[in-house]
Length: 191
Image (cartoon, rainbow, N blue to C red):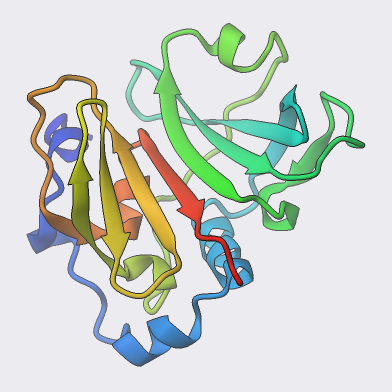
């Protein structure tokens, strides 16, 4: 992968498939559907609980990276998760996460709390019509991150900045942000 993919989101190569419509995105926006769409992108991934922070369980998985640089990993934060012991593993598809993150690190031992995790293969492809093709637009530019708001999904997307002078596109797609491996997806509170 080129470095450009990680600094600029190029809309010209990330056009949504023709079968993705406003209606299909609006009808498929429950938290469960969003989790299913993310699980499709990271099909078969096994997450391991690495930390407990108050009532939040923090699950992580190492991602096989084509580049030899930083270790890429996933983070899923689950509310009210006090009963599951650290070191337990579960499929991403089965986690009722409230926040999902794609990250990279140069200190995997610290990120994984000393637990050994085998890197899992990542296909970076999803089917046409997946709701992660929802368009996102810049909502706020903060010194440490940019916050994007999707057209239809009840989430917000945060992209962490490595440098203050980094440039990101004003519009992109949820899936393109996920593939940057410095992204958080936070489910909006449902009423």
